[in-house]
Image (cartoon, rainbow, N blue to C red; front, side, top):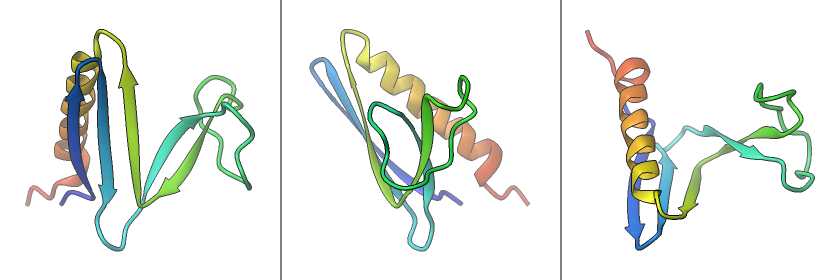
Length: 92
């Protein structure tokens, strides 16, 4: 049972990964704190808990730039597929 749909586009030296939650569900998206987020959002366990936070969303976009974006997109996609197989798919 996949809770997210995944779409990956590679354009020269940039990737765009689009995530969309299944109807009736959400997902937590970890983001860096580049500026003060609006409202109270749960902190991430990354670092000391003050550098990243989780935002609950119905959809999201992840962009990567640079010379190794294809590898980053493949690593994310393969990791996502493995995560779904391990934790989100009913096997019996």
